[in-house]
Image (cartoon, rainbow, N blue to C red; front, side):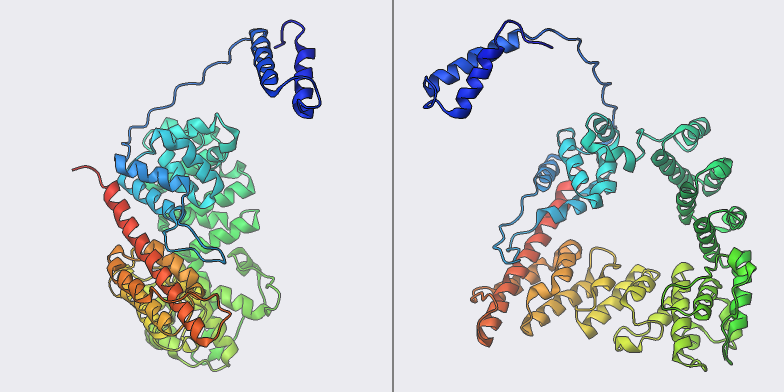
Length: 531
């Protein structure tokens, strides 16, 4: 496109005057603006017409309903990211942080089967671009129209990589459509397709994967193999056993891990034979070498820095052996009895053995062994029968039923407070209700009574805002009132001032927590479908 006439010199003169100022060149500001307006019209009128770009295809239909109007208004508020006014110095203020409620809104809307409001799709994609934690739920809510928009804006290209990419997946019953997308689709589309087929019929996913396995890249084989964790069963064993001979070490290791999660598999039996030869009532004798059979079954030969070879091999054998093999080896004892036995060869072997049993209990999803290795929640953490590691204990808790998990963590919080409970609370089912919710609020109140500052528990407070049952809001409002009115000290005064400052901060923290719970309750009501 080119401008008509000879207005280029006049326009450059106007730009020079604007840059230098009208006082240094003849003319007034009003005259300059008038002249600029005239030149703008002349330049636009002189543009030569160009061929119009092709219009995009219409957005695909999304049959899901939109959320009710109050919920749409709430989503707009959350996407705008308006937060309560903070006061600096790391303090968050007493108003809820709306950005932290956005993931909960998206999850609840997804459970109701809603789609994103059309007008809010750009803001939703912008939010997902900025926060990777939002992407799975945001893209699910955005649906095919979100992907349609993503193709029109390079800033949203992540949506094409992170989702099904091409839009709606074929029905798993549509064999021709499934085969076509599996052969021709992008990697993200194929991953999504494999997951959908796996959820519909586990064996069909293995057949689909087998059809192209030999030609897949190693990194893709690893990702595809990982998708078999969902719905893993004995029917997968032949495919996984064949994958033990894969040319990629990572693929072999993943196949071995999946097979060891099947206690009846041939690999589990082989590992049981090796582990039973090393561990028994008479003591522990770790393997002297890592032979070819062990290597094929997924044992990693070289230990990480600081680990001895023989203890490293021992741990891998024990964690891959079915836990059922130990009852007969230890004279019919149950899991709790076996875990409580002293190890004849010293604490180092006991620690390695118990850690391996913890990994086996998590991998095999065995609640009896998990409870035995966790022990009593009220006992000192250093005396835990299986492991004192909170990360490992959180994994063991994840094996237990929801109610048992919440009861164990509630007892732990009552006995030890909140300072060590963050990882354990993270595996509890939301909302924290009943005994667990009461234990958390009691522990927060006890911390306030002890004169601690709430930012010492910022992680737990953040979790509580997202996870506590909104029914606890009334009690928290009472605690907020009890902590209100005291002077807030920055921490530099005397002991009495510091205590008074802590009380003031706690009042503010409880007020924010209660307000967040009230807001979560309102969101739940707003998202409820109309009767």
